[in-house]
Image (cartoon, rainbow, N blue to C red):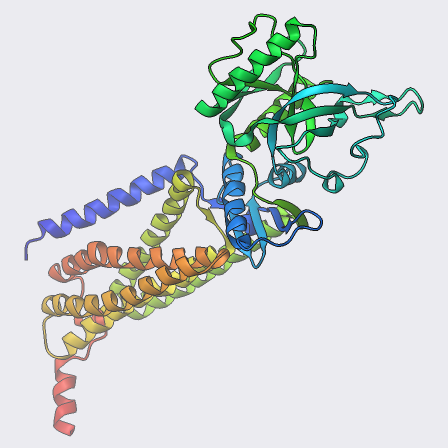
Length: 495
C-alpha cells in the first residue's frame, strides 16, 4: 500500500481545517437571520387608486414591485433579506434592521418622479388657494395628477408658509404644466455636496432622451427668465412639489443645460446629518426605480433580538448536547474508529461554521433557526457514515479477512452506500431549496451542504486515517470487537 497519497490527503484536510480555524479566529462570524438577531417583518398590500379596476397583469406587476423593493433593500446593506409574494401581498423580512421608520418609508415610497414647468405660485391666503387638492389630507387620499395633464399640486410640508388668516403653517400650492420628464429618464442618482446651508443634494444623470428634453426645457425657461417671466420648473415626487428651482443665470437662452445632469435639493431647516440621510434615501429610491403599484403596510412589526438570542442559545445547546452524546457513544462502542468519527464531526463543525461565515461575506447568506436545525440533523448524517464504515469493517473481519484487507473492502462497500444515500439527500435538498420559501430554504441549504461535506470528509480523511491505522496495527480484532477465529470455529461446530 502506497502511504504517500494517504498522508497527503490527511495533510490537505488538516491544512484546510487550520485555515478555517484561523479565519474564524480573526473574527469571522456567520450572519444571523431575522429569527436569530431580530429585525423587521412586514406585509404590504397593493393599493389601487379609488374606482380603478384590478389589472389583468396584477401578478406580474407585483413581481416587478418585489424586484424594485429588493433592489432598494439590497442598497441599504441588509444581510439576506427575504422579499417574496405571499398570495396577493408582498412580505419582507429584514434581519438586523433597527430603524423601522426609515425602512417603512423607503419600501412604501412609490417614487413617481416628474419635472413640470411652474405656471404660478398659490400661497396660503390667496383667493385661489382653495382650488386643487386639500394639502392637509392624507397623502393616499389626494388624487394623483396624470403625467400628461397640468393642474394644481401641493408643496412639501417642510416648506410650509404661515396662513395670514389663521396663523397656521400650510403648504404652498403650485399650478404646473404637464410632465416634461419622468423617473424613467433617470439613469443614476447619487448624493453630492451642496453649497451654503444646503450641505447635501441629490445629483441626477439622465439618459440620452431625457438629456435632450432637459436641455430643451431649460433653454425655454432661460428665455422666459430673460423676458421677466417665471422661469422655474417643479420637481414633483409622489404628487408633491419638492422644490421649484430656476435655471442658473449662466444658462443661456436657446442653449439650456446640456450633458443630462440635474440636481434635487433636500428640505430646508434640517441639520447636516438629517440632510445627508434625506439625500441618501431619496437617491436610493430614485436609483432603484419607482414602484409599479402603491403599497400599504398591513402588518409591520419589529422582532426583538432578545428572542432571537434565546433561540440561538437553545439551538447551540441542543447541538452541543447531541454532539457530546453521539461522540461518547461512538468512542465507547467503536474505540479507535469511534475516535475517527468524532474527528470527522469536529472537522465538519469547523468547515460548516467557516463556510457559513464566508457565504455571509460573499453572497450575504444569513443563518436562521431552520438552518441551525439542519446543522444539528447533519450531526446524525456524519455519525451514520462512520457507523456504516465501522460495521462493514467488522463484517469483513468476521468473514475471516485480515484487518488491513477488511478496511479496504469495507470502505469500497460503505462508500457506495454513503454515496447513494447522500445523493438522494442532496437531490431532495436541492428540490426543497428551489421550491420552498422563507426559512425552509435555509434548512434545505444546510442539509445539502452537510451531505456534500460528509462525502468529502469520509473519502479524504476517514478513509486514509483508517488505512494507516490498520497498516500500523492500531486497529485490531479486539478493538473492533470482532468475533475471534476460535469462537467462529466453535460456533460452526455446534451448528
